[in-house]
Picture 1 (cartoon, rainbow, N blue to C red):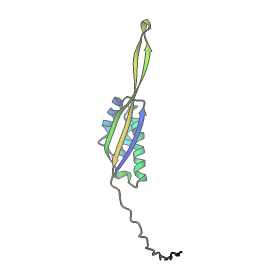
Picture 2 (picture 1 turned 90 degrees about the vertical axis):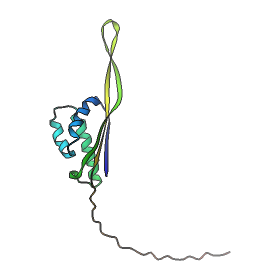
Picture 3 (picture 1 turned 135 degrees about the vertical axis):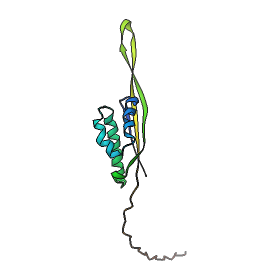
Picture 4 (picture 1 turned 30 degrees about the vertical axis):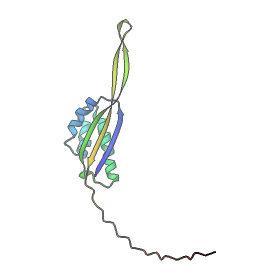
Length: 133
């Protein structure tokens, strides 16, 4: 079963986020949540947030945190905010403030919980006669 979590419009370059995502892809989600804050990169914070959201989604679906594995981590480019910086002789240089979209897909095995069988109840049908004119 797949569990998805998406975070959009993060004000950070996709290039910086991809470096941190490469560290995580061979870990389990619980390991990644523990280790990323100590990576020394600012890009680790939004990635941890998305992974925690995906793990929480898995818990809602009844999957244990220990059974989860990363299937896919995508860092896509979002819109670019274009700004200008004034320079000499009345000109300006352009500054591109890049944004990112993070998409995490976890895969896990759903354990079946034994549910008690409900007793069948029989409903008696009552026949109604149509009245003729």
